[in-house]
Length: 418
Image (tube, rainbow, N blue to C red; front, side, top):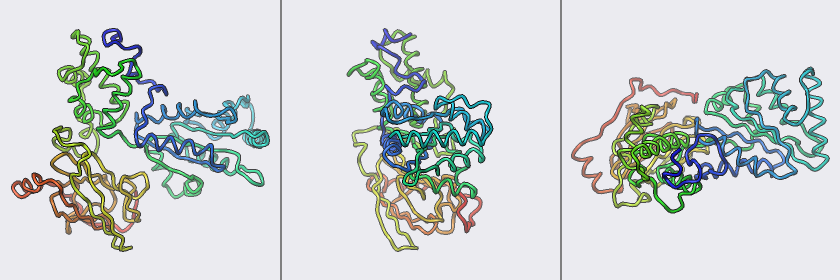
C-alpha cells in the first residue's frame, strides 16, 4: 500500500518468513553453520531453540533452499501428533502413502527407505519445526530413528527446532538418551541494538530502498527497547511506523510516527513485558562508540582456581552454564541462563534470570543490582568482580549509592534444577 510512497519494490517488514530477506546476525550465522553441519556430519543431530519470532523458520527455509540435489529431506511443522501420526507424516513427506498402515509396517517402510537412499549415495534429513509441541513418546521415536544405521554409518540426520520450552522438555531425566545423541545444541538469541539497526537497513535495502534512510537513525534505540531485538517484533513496529508516516504524507519515518505506532500497538518496553529488568536510558546515544568498553568483569572459579576477565560493552551479556551464553560458567551450581548484565554508556546492571542458586552480594541474594566500581558478588562457586571503566559512573556511584532489589529468599539451594 505504501510502497510507491517510500520508493520500494516490495514490503520490507512483512511477517511471513522469506529467506530473501534473511539477515545473519552473530547468533543467526552460528545457527546456520550448525544446520549446515548436519549435512556434512554422518551423525548430524542438531537442536536449535529460540524465542517466538526470533527467525527460526526463516533460517530453516534458507537452509532448506540451499540443500543439494543429493539431500532428501522431510519437513514436519505440524507437531501435535501421536507416534503413529508422526511416522505417517514423515513418510508422506518422503512421497509415500502410509495412512492405513500399522506402526510396525511404518517403521519397516521407513527403515528400508533410509537404507536404499544411503546405498544410492543420498543423504536423508528429518527437519522438525515447532518441536516444543512434541510429546515424550514422539521424541522417543525420534531417538530410535536417530539410531538407524548400516554397518558403518548412521543413515538419518535430524534437526529439531522449537521454542525455549523444548529445552525444558529435553532437560528432564527421561530425555537423557535423546540429548546424548545430539551433536550440537544452540539457543538463538535476540538481536543486539547494533544488529537491530543493521537488520532494519538490510530489509529496506533488499526491498529497494538502496542507500536511502527511511528511518531516522535516532529512532533505532527506541525500536530496540520496544522490540527487544526480536525480529518479528521489529517488523511489526517498523511496518506500523511506516503506515503512520504514510498516513501523514511523509516519505521518511520520524519520532512522531514511531510514537504513534507504539501507541497504536499498545506496546510497552519489551523488558517490562518479560521478566527482564528495564534499565534506564538503555538507548542513550552520544558521541562515544558502541564498541567502547564500559567495564570489566573478573571471574574466579573457586572449584578449579581458573581466572578470566571479560570486557563489557554497551548492550546485553548473558551468563550461564551452557555454551550458547556470552559468558559460559561451566558448573552444576550455575543455571543454563543464570544472569544477564546490561550496560549503557554510564552504568551496568546485573539481573538474575530466575536461576536456582541466585546472585549473592555477601549474604544477600539479589534479584537486580546497579553495579558500582569494585563490586564483588557470587554465582554458585564463581566469584565475580566488576570494575568500571568510566570516570563519570564512578563519581555518580559515590554520590548516589546503588539501587537494588533483594530476593526475599536468601537461602542458596544445593542442586541445580534449571
